[in-house]
Image (cartoon, rainbow, N blue to C red; front, side):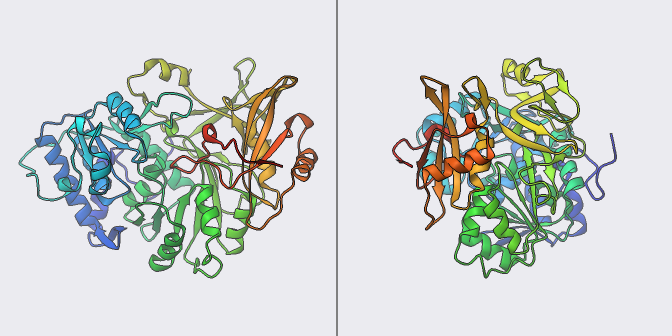
Length: 505
C-alpha cells in the first residue's frame, strides 16, 4: 500500500485521532457550534471520559450505541468515545416516522439509546421509549461517573459506524464501516483534496449520513483544524458562517448550493476565504455552478456511496470546467472499474457499464444480512448499482441507476442522462425523470421540471431542446411543471413521491 498523505495520522484506529491535536494545540478550536467553541483539549477529555463511562456501564466491544440527534458536539463526542471503547455508533435519522425508527432499532438492537434534548419531547416517547432512551447531553457531563476502568485495545478492523441506507427500494439495511474503512477513505480524501490545521470547515451534512463524518469533518479533527458544525441547513446561515468564521472549505449536495446561490445576500456576501467547495450526491446544475464560479469560488465534485466509505471518484478544483458533467477519476487507494451489463466482464479502456469499487474503504458488509452482502460484493468488487461511462482519459460520468433504467422501444434509457440535458436549459432550476408504462413503447419518460423564478417554460420547446441533444427514444414523452421536487433529508430527489398533479406542458 502506498504511503498516506503527509500530515494524516498514522494509527488506523479512529479513537486515537484526537490525541495529537489535543497534545500540540490543546486550546485551538475543534468545533464551533451554536455560537459555542470547544477546543481540542476539551473534546479529547470528554471523549475519553465518555468511553470509560460506557465501558463502566457494561457495554462491550461490538455493542451498538444509537443516537437520535441533530448535528451536535455531543454526537461527535459519542463517536470518538465509541471508537475508544470498541463500540459502534449508530446515528438514527431524526426525520423518520415512529414506524421507520422501529424497523431500524429492531434491526440494530442497540445496547444504549441516547436522545438529544431537542428530540426528546417529539421522538423519545412511543416506539423509542421501548429502548429505554437516556438523554444524550447527560453523558457528556458529570451526570455519570467515569470510574476506574480499562479501555479495550483499539482495533483497526472493529466496527465504528453503522449507517442505515436510504431504503428507497425496500427495507433499510445497515452498512457497517470499520475503523480501517474510515481511515482509508479519509487518507484518500487528504491525498486528493488536502486540508491543513489552519483550515476552517463548514459542516452541513447530517451526522446520520456517512458524509457527515467521512467528508472533511473527521479529516479536519485528525489534523487539528476547526469545524463549524451546523445543526441543520439554512442558506442564510451558510453565508453568515462563511463570513463570520472565515470558512475555507465546505461540502454540500447540489440543492444546498442552489438554495444558497438564490439567497438575496449571495451576490454581496464575502466568500473570499473559501479555498474550494466540494459538491456530491447528485449532478450539479450548470447554472448553479456558474453562479458560484462567478463569485470566484473553485468547485470540486465527488461521487461516492455509503458502502464505499463514501469517497470513490473526484474532480479537484478547476477540473469541473474542462470536464463538464463528469464526476472524476478514482481517489487514491481506491480501484474503480466498469462491469459489462450483458456478460458481467470487467471492462478495460473507454466504455459504459455498472460502476464497481474495490479497496480498503469498502464496507465490512450489511448488518446481519449475509445474503445482501454477497449480492453487493462479488469477487472482491462492490457493485454500486450506478451506471457510468469512462472516457479515454479515465474520467467517469454517471449515466444513471441500474434500477432506475427503463426500456423504451427496446432501448435502454437512463434518467440521469436526460436530467443532465434538461438541467442545462436556462429556464430549468431542477428536474427529475422517471419511466412510466406505455402500451406502444413499453415505457416512456416523464420529466418533472421546476422553473427558475420568473422563467417561462414551454413543453414543446423543452422537447425540441431534448431532441437536439438526445436520441429520439430518450426524449420525455410528457413534461410536467411542478413548484418543487420531493427530497430525502439528505437532499436527494425521492422519485417515489413525485407529484402527480402538476401542469402538463
